[in-house]
Image 1 (spheres, rainbow, N blue to C red):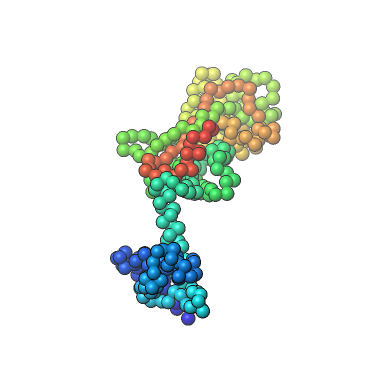
Image 2: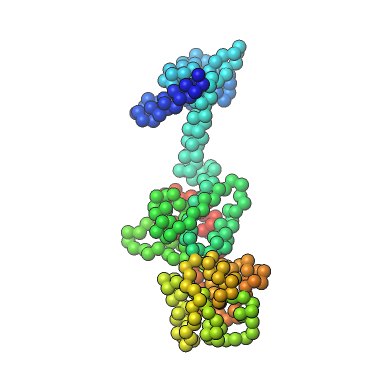
Length: 311
């Protein structure tokens, strides 16, 4: 019997959604919701400034519309029927969503507590953690993290399934673009390797001539700057690997296949424990990191904590 009641009710709710919205009187639902939570018809009627008979009529109209009794009397007390419990679940969801909607659109009350972040799949994980650190560990904040190509992530922004995209490759901007790109960090790029490779006082030119080098791929601004540096030093380094993924560059440097051209933040842990070290030479190169958003009338308020934080 219980299964039949549930199935019938769900069918009723589906029909309410598919038919004209006027079929459902939400005032009736709110009156039911108030009585269900209070458990006393007389007391609820007084709170709502209605007569008990008027409130009973409103609830009976909802029962007629749904085709099921929502309460049963046991002495002086009202108890929810099985159909009433199901209806109360729906009513709680509907009215809670209404509160959230008002709070979000008025920028008041409880802010949105879910932040959806997209990051270029090749981006430094350490950088991502540092960017998100102000929100990490907050009990009332949920982070949804996704990675992908820049094209995929920008599509996520356009469909509003992402709030922000982290990248070291800013999207092209033109008159038709709706993306907003904000620089969030410029990280110095260093020559990084094992202590054994970087022992001694060799010049930068010697280091690049005598060691294989792990470099970013040719479409990277850092790679272009590194190639200009080599031209200026008149060296032609042996390339151990050309990599578009900072995590892979970090692993290759740890495996000691060569010196890596990387921002230190990508190997923060290895530098701390001494597994890798920085060369005592300035390359004069930086890696720029960007947060890309899209113009919204109601931006996610959690973004303000991150974008205005000093990284």
